[in-house]
Image (cartoon, protein in one colour):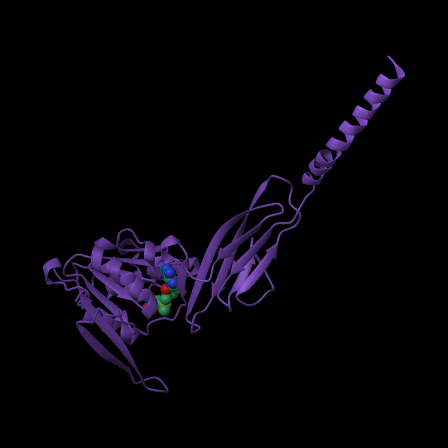
Amino acid sequence: MSRSSLLLRVALMLFAALLTAPVLRGQAADQRERQAVVVVRVHPEATLTVDGKETRQTGERRRFVSPPLGPGKKYTYTFVAEWMPRNNYETYKVTRKVTVEAGKTVEIDMSEADLKKGDILFIRFVPTPPEVIDAMMKLAKVGEDDVVYDLGCGDGSLVIAAVKQFHAKRGVGIDLDPQRIREAKAKAKEAGVEDKVEFRQGNVLEVDDIAKATVVMLYMSDEMNQKLMPILQKQLKPGARIVSHRFTMGGWQPDKTVTVDLPQEDIPEEKLIHLWTIKKKQEQNHSGK
Ligand SMILES: C[S@@+](CC[C@H](N)C(=O)[O-])C[C@H]1O[C@@H](n2cnc3c(N)ncnc32)[C@H](O)[C@@H]1O
């Protein structure tokens, strides 16, 4: 090989090395671990947890930065936002699974609950006093042909009273809180009515056998009643009764409202209970009346 062609070959090799160096550098860089970022819009007072760990930021916009993640791989985090809207009685719980990639940013909106997608509206346990339970059973005219459901049954007192004192055929209680279900089952055993009642854990907005109820008892909230209203109107049979302690159903006017006095309390109190009866389809107008 002549000296000039040797020089040309060396020059070409150097040129090729110069061209490929940035590509190789880029490949090396792509192999580096990087953080992912999730920007979350939430209710300003929400607590936010990521994979069960509470985050410390506050405000409407929170920024979660992941630990360095391997290149090209996807990771899924579970974000849970919880807040109380206007009172200390209701809680919203919004859950989202978010998949992230190293070096990328994702934005999600968790500022509103979508109850149709499994987000939860939870009402805290406040028991209905025995005098009010009695009045609710009488207002619904509970008797031996009835199947009585309590949506959000708490410690089971209404369901147990329905079968024990008012001789309902069967009683069903549903509650999201497993502790309440354990209490209700223990109370039913103590009252000797285990074989006539069923208590199960679940979300009241997802009950799939409510059509079996001839009476539905409620002590929830205005907001929850309004979510339940179309479900009850659609699924309950004509003649079925709904009785709600305290809360109404938006535009659906009750057939009757009764005041229950609790005179024995230190501060005398009046409790309102409301009754709706499911009419035959042709008798219902648009608001369900
Ligand atoms: C105000 S307490 C009423 C308890 C009982 N019905 C009574 O009148 O004594 C509301 C109950 O509903 C339950 N609850 C709240 N949100 C719920 C939901 N989304 N699905 C099922 N149960 C729920 C709570 O655990 C609580 O026991």
